[in-house]
Image 1 (cartoon, rainbow, N blue to C red):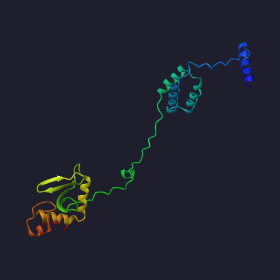
Image 2 (tube, rainbow, N blue to C red; image 1 turned 135 degrees about the vertical axis):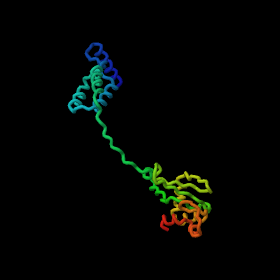
Image 3 (cartoon, rainbow, N blue to C red; image 1 turned 30 degrees about the vertical axis):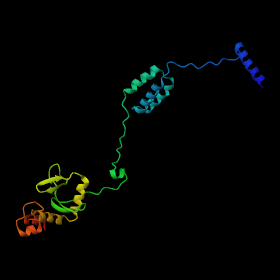
Image 4 (cartoon, rainbow, N blue to C red; image 1 turned 90 degrees about the vertical axis):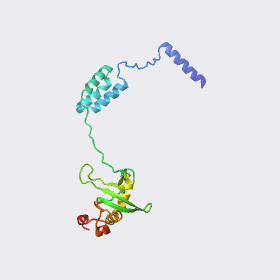
Length: 214
């Protein structure tokens, strides 16, 4: 077996020396062929620029015979053409509660403007608040809550705390309004001093009672 292999190798060598066996000639590399980057850029331009179907077909058909010079000329011509307009399809807005997989957050309780007294369920302390609901200006639609201590008003800026306070008031707004007047001696609606016995007992002055319909 080994002798047969050696004999074949020897015959091949002798054949090459005698010129009876053709030598393998490597395929020459065309130095003028376009580079890979040129071809990629050319393809992107042909696909992305405004062209007729016939123009696009002829450009791609000519690519196998292209040289670096010819493909450069084609690229320069394509650069001057407009891009195919992209169709923008806006994505529908997704509420944050759907995005994060939680239920919708309930809206803050609606409470009319006025002064209220409620017992804080966290510490069982009676506290006094002013609720402002602007009817004009840039703050229309907002509800502001301040804790009242004498003549001092401390704004409640924490959203959850503000909603908790409004929720307690909303359980019985009229009683919270009246209680402010009884405890402070000032109308729970306008905070004017209550001067007669009936108003002090009710917690709301006569004008405001008529306005509120109570």
